[in-house]
Amino acid sequence: MNLLWPLLFSAIAWFLLFYYLKRRLDSLSRDDGQIQRVRQELNQLIMELDLTTERNIELLENKIGELKGISNEAQREIQLLRQQKEEYSQALNRYRELGRKENNLIGKKIHQEEKHTEPSKKLSPKERVLQQFRGGAAPEEIARIEEIPLGEVELIISLNNLGDKRGNS
Image: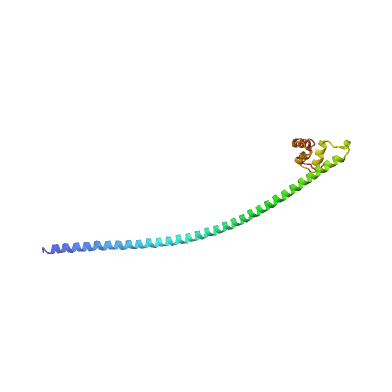
């Protein structure tokens, strides 16, 4: 009997050790199942992120393409406007040159008429200024032709309430 107690004690210890190890292995296998589920969920999240990223990249590429198209159209419009501005400037310069030539002709014509008129029919400087202004000459041209200050020409025009009423008597 003396031998029975240690043997029984040793059998119970082995049984408890076996039971403990079995429970430990079961819990580890359950942990492995949880780890497996977590891995599956992570893989699924990664796949969803990949799909979302690809879709977002495609959307960005589409928007970039649209912006490039808009930018190209804007560049064409700017180029067109520059060409139109240049044409306008050239036309404006031509008209100004024609206006200067016309003003010179008007001034010369008036001077020639003055030279050929009798002294009693000569016009006063005021009348010459008004006549030239009504004929379409600019105040600067009148001042240059008549050799009088620009301020005086403008004063004569304004005192006679002509303002921009060229050609209207």
